Length: 160
Image (cartoon, rainbow, N blue to C red; front, side, top):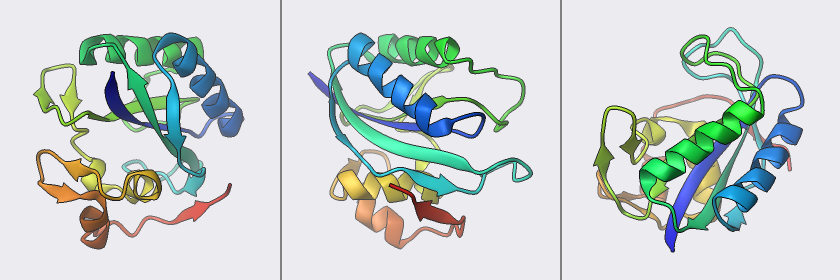
């Protein structure tokens, strides 16, 4: 089994419900959830004139390879009404693959580790909660170190 960290988030409709539905679908179609962070409310990143997001990081185990994992996460997003109208736009649910064990993948449709995770408070703070010592295989730093060197000042608030 492979250890995977996923970021779940959304800002359209009942984001908590969409995240809950996504987690149920992940458990039935991808693998067991081993740990999950608290839920966090955050300002939008990249495109700031939209509603706040609710985000959560989960740790799962799966037998699927990275491409199969991507395909299954996209299927879950689509089943939950995800529309890809604009980059960084509002969405019902977004599922980002942050880490796939310690693999480094750089393909047209799939980059792991997620290329922006070290720049984003809304990703690192929930990840810090469940995997502080996880070692970023490209940057050669722990999540704690990445958080300590983070420039992002985005507002983030734990909500549960």
